[in-house]
Image (cartoon, rainbow, N blue to C red; front, side, top):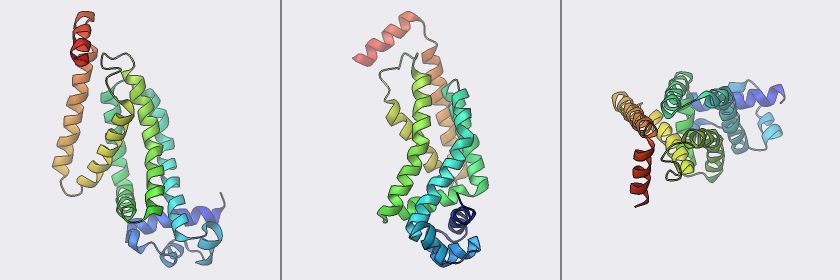
Length: 205
């Protein structure tokens, strides 16, 4: 990637942090990136295409640092702990603001909706793979929609990131509730053969 293109992507992300999605114009992004406005159109064709590229690039950069950690996760509690760590880092870096602005803009702008959905899908894929691996030997395997659960987990953390801005204590309580749910799954996974058969019978019923 050329230096100018990367500067524009970085400038777009920083502009959203400072001015919100409504303030992400050609002029403000170019000023933040310290480049000529014409370069936005030269490299991306439009501000929308730049914002789409910035959204995906930012997500790919963040995900790259966590993919390896996901492969090391051995249970749902570790997955939640990793999610909490990521949550704290994203807020400290200001990425929660960027995500919130992209989601807000996506409600009325199909171009931003497409980019935001693609960025979220980058997170959902590895999380789904991890949950599928963790649930493989569980008595609940076959009864849990791992694809839906992965989306619920990702959607939950996105919501909590936004929720925390107005109710930090409530966000902590929600995360604690998820941790207790993960403990319950651990208990179920520790059941003996007879109890596992009884549980499966009840689930089938």
